[in-house]
Length: 440
Image (cartoon, rainbow, N blue to C red; front, side, top):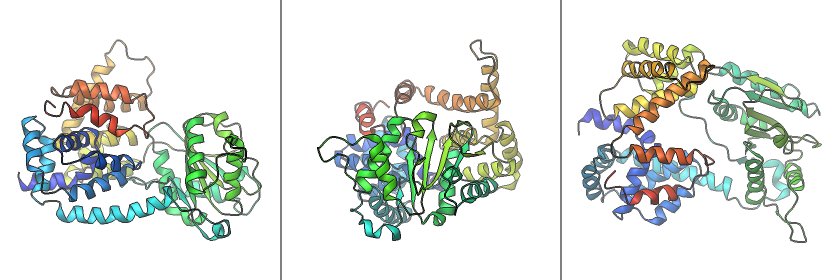
């Protein structure tokens, strides 16, 4: 393997491991050959956060670094050259230093995570001096710009910090799906959590079921509150919610309700009648609520920030490529989701061949023209929908065109599109592929 190719794999290892196709292929091969066992998969499955799961994967790989050659041979025979390259690079000790660093980080991060998700009971007398972080993830490493929006959001939440009014302590970030609402909330937490005594509670607010599940886990796993009454019957939903807010009484903290969809569902879980309410941040595509809340409208990225986002994502340092990067940003209209999809697509193609932003723009133009001439195309597509759909269509086309596994991969995508995205049992997917690794 050429040195340049090795360095490219090294720079993109995190993305490779977190990519569904590479991750599944590699781990399935390791399972079939006995390098990885069910216990290893169980460990990975038990870590809900993707970044922590990647780091744990590094740690597990470190302990098995002398047993890859037969796996590499199997992958090469099955024409899985990309996955083979990863393991061959590991066999060549290319990642030794990087893995040691990541493994140490994993150990430290998992200690913090265990404290968050499997804590010891917290004494009520110590609550005022303790900080709490529940289900909070760090923002993406590519987060760029949005400084003005972060300042505006902070001002909205803090305007009435010392006033008792409930509504004045609530703010909402509204915008299209994929515009960056969740990442903005994560970056806000990273920058301003000290204003809330480093106590931040992240609630998944898509449906009443996800809201309930988040509150139940917070209550039972973290706060060690009982879920049953004295008579053994399950507590009423409202009683449990009230107990949770009671626990945080007189404590400066921030509750984040992410990706809220239903006005009425969300209202049941908000601290609207709490004497000493926490600060509340809502992210949602909705712009109108039946209760008073300040709203920050999040739009596409500034062009300069979008260019920096692309250059950083593709690790471009050559100033001669800035012009083509600007062209891509304008073509994709500074939409974060479209830009993220384009970056991932380009990096994936660069693993297999010489591929540039120019190549991507040619493919994008061709795909867009085909969509425009399609008879079943909706008559009133917004520019946002058309742009993000085209970038997504390019990706799915690439997957489907894989002669060995494309059809199977698309079937899997179609199936998991019906699942809650953060709760899909990885083991089910891996077991389904174990019998077909050799032909895929």
